[in-house]
Length: 351
Image (cartoon, rainbow, N blue to C red; front, side, top):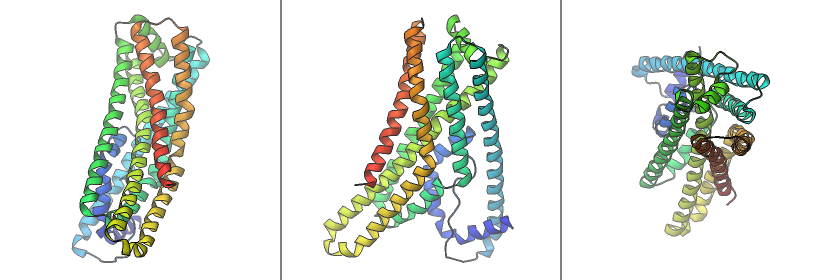
């Protein structure tokens, strides 16, 4: 029965494929990256129902195969995401047990403890967002109002800018992810004995210290870093897309006044409706994504403080000092970027 319902929905939404494909292609770098790391699951966005009831019998078998494939993809990616959630939970529990059993490197252990629980919580939030399928389906639904009310060349230019923005943010996320992986790899197996012993104790404790456990928790740390970076990237991308639509709405209003001032009273209702639709979208996304920003503030700021404390009270070599300063800067920068992105978006809502 579920398969038949999905098949009927696919027929009913035949005319919406171009809109869905546009936003899905725009977000593909993020969705593929996050799905690869076990953070997102599903087929990214259920199609909205349309009033058109055409039945294309010649395409029915192909539609049925597509529905079956999508259902299989949703299940497999959800199972993989659940497995990653379990790994992140186990890693956070390990850090919790270690800080109870060992008193050395307390500030760094505490920073890693907070960070690991933040990563697990981020993954849970993104899993829930994908399960409910609220945010992306909302973006797809709202996009059609602006695509239809905007000149074709202006819409293409906007999509091109958004694509560059998504690709840039995802590339930066991968850069942070790989940098942290290289840092942990170098710390565990590099030439600095003091750094290697410290990182080995922090990453592996309370389990036995050997090459196998080091490599296992290197993988765990890599997944943690992905859960740290990509939810913030997701938040910034969605906020930037909504922000650009507010800008587009304002530009459409200005063009209408300049080109056809006499038509403005007739078009005012449509422009007002577009603005109201955007405000609704911001409200809905806020309800879903606000927990990511709360977690970022609640964890990154204490982590910066603990790293600063460790930097001031512990004897370190030049390499360790440089790394501590770098990651303190990264944590602080994430808070700043998240705050500015949210502030710019909400400024558009009230102006």
